[in-house]
Length: 592
Image (cartoon, rainbow, N blue to C red):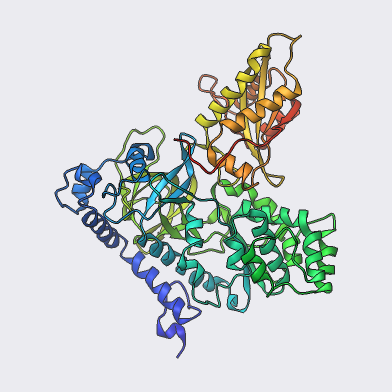
């Protein structure tokens, strides 16, 4: 009997019986979104009724929406930070969750310059795995034959620490890759990777990347999809190939493993992979020594059907570069998730990046939405099923792990509905100015960094008059560019190139720990650059804005720019450029 007659789906004919059940689950959840949400909230409130946090609001065991909305306030991380710190310090009483906190997931968002600590519980892994299990059944509706090959995915674990109370603190993907859900996952012909677990789990970024790239080259004919979590990660892999192709080709030619690979588990597993293949080595050498790397992904991996990377939000800046390296292959954005919660998935993953919308899965958490109207002071939260198409909202979540009416900081725009579940386009992170990789620098952080760097100039009777910035991503890795206009009060005692380089480093030292980790440990961000512009440049910038209709009374210097004419104006006024001379300080330990 045909699979689609066993269990058909409105989304399309499933590839196998397992897919049919997954698609049916999506239909059931989205068809009854409001009822599912009501049940999820009741479960969370009943389970956590005796926690210190909820008892403080006198719910008296109520699990209904009305009581919840009338008594529980909307909160930010800073509101919860004292309670979270108690858990981190070893308090095992039920503070936020009735279930024991199993570990902390470190957010790419920061508070006081440090990664936010998101408490989680063991069952959340099951919930995340459930969402992962829905991705390929949806993809199989759009791309056929993915069971006939493999995926070349560049996946990495990041450093982890322990809190004073002994709980692990690590990024959500590191937690997932180190879990049995990932390490002992059952064989699935639709989800086979070229990268061995040993390489993914290696904490040394060079050894991990080198091994994953080597395996991908050996299996180049079997690769049907190429991916990483973020677009920036895939471009970093391409840059790695540019820098290391000769050593990789030598390993393939001789059937030996580079002596820089010292991790015992990698060395052992690679004995089953590495073998002499002079023809493959010659092919790689011929392709990689060419000056033109346009289409290198499809040249090296000719059967690639699509790229699996996030290219929404800040990652959209990498789309032109991805198109260049892949000859415009489709870019699939499959899911929407964060350290706080996994939210939903893209039911049309092969759409164009500008059309990506995520369907919120109502079983993952209880979702509310704060209308994002800059001139409105309204704080009334809207339920999942009641949002309106075309309107923008800030996402607010209540989770099984104990976050209640927590403001995630993501701004979403409603684009439609699948059954009764809304679909959202990710617009941006609230208040984020600059982002290259997983870093998120907001206006206040940038302002503080400029102020700290300005202190270096005091001895030269010089100050920063105005500044703006942009994320330079044409080169890999990308880096922050800061435009400065200086007021020099002593022309005899000008700050030297070395002094301005120290200003670059002072800015980097002032930025948050996620930025500094990307610079120091992950090598995913290049040295910060300051470009000095001629006096009067920012007045010209204002004149330009006014000529385009801006009000002279309301004009503010933009602290981040991306509009091409403005970039051209600024760059035409640059008198000197300066780069950070060394790496900023970063350690795994959190500041207390």
